[in-house]
Image (cartoon, rainbow, N blue to C red; front, side):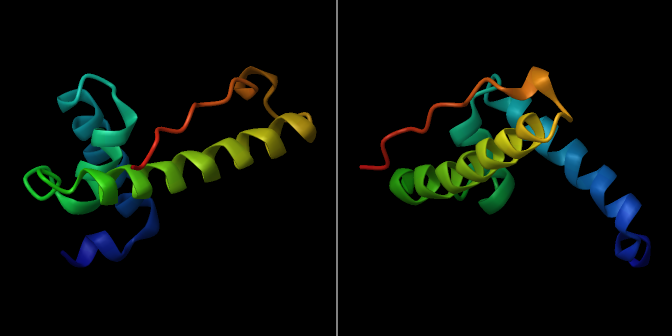
Length: 87
């Protein structure tokens, strides 16, 4: 546990866990991000909360992609991800 306080290790483990959650949900962002946030068993029956959380993450990811593209860092990130209806 002590090693998780190291930001580099923490990011590597977090990225690996996110990747495994996305893989579990066949790349679908809403359930994958929700499972990452709440745990895979916790998202059952909490669809609106899950979608709202995932949409906030996706919205911020789109804003970051826009910033990267606008500042010449990442032309390949111009495609926007569509948000899902949280109702």
